[in-house]
Image 1 (cartoon, rainbow, N blue to C red):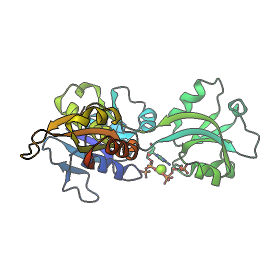
Image 2: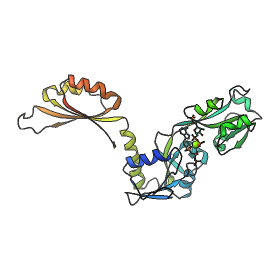
Image 3: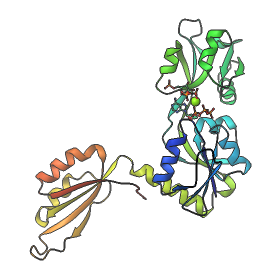
Image 4: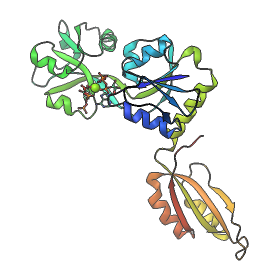
Length: 286
Ligand SMILES: Nc1ncnc2c1ncn2[C@@H]1O[C@H](COP(=O)(O)OP(=O)(O)OP(=O)(O)O)[C@@H](O)[C@H]1O
Ligand SMILES: O=P(O)(O)OC[C@H]1O[C@H](OP(=O)(O)OP(=O)(O)O)[C@H](O)[C@@H]1O
Ligand SMILES: [Mg+2]
């Protein structure tokens, strides 16, 4: 099975990092190679441009793909399905125009020109508004086009808003909200490998922001400790083999949200826990 992933750009590294954390370690994937093997002999990674990945999956060059939702929508592929929101590469496609110009609303764009790297998404957006501007496709530096009289407005990616601000552009409307997705061609979705890859990647997402808490608790304080552990399932309670103590203490393990760890430690300690350990979780298969 082949997974197409971004070969460069801002999505490349986080995608490789995610595959590694999911246990799909890349082998002999030196720079500029088109393919890399993984520890799983049945899984190959194919490197492609973020914008080409939906087409690669649709055409059969790969079975699965990882790229931005914006690219999937722009490619207008109708035979692929989303399997997982990977929740990075978050950005918005927005309609924006010069701050000090006379374009303040969608209606102001009747008979005007909009420049974008996403002509299909832009056309779909305007089709819902009843306004029908000319759409000009550019391949980058879109933010410049209103200042060189190429366009009256743009549809482009924004995340922090810095680029729009630097180019004195104001948002008129949101066109699309995007993040990176795992998707696959519909005719292969039932295969066992697809399920395995999906589970591996989602287990990394589930583990993010969670910590594993371990502690020892006198058996007669167990209920007090249990009461203060915020529930994410569990906790797991285990007997401790201890010759001197008999069964006076038990080990308590629990998965907790990272943001709750600080408070929980204080509370379980007050409730009688000792030998408290906090560790990171690599993967959490639910
Ligand atoms: N500023 C941003 N913040 C968050 N995600 C972004 C941002 N810019 C782009 N993305 C996401 O990353 C995807 C790829 O963008 P990137 O800039 O890496 O590639 P590109 O410039 O289109 O590619 P290439 O360098 O191959 O021309 C976008 O389609 C979008 O989903
Ligand atoms: O809201 P901001 O945080 O400023 O991000 C928005 C910018 O990020 C992307 O460009 P990128 O940095 O990927 O450069 P590129 O034009 O080379 O793709 C996008 O095309 C915007 O220009
Ligand atoms: Mg870019």
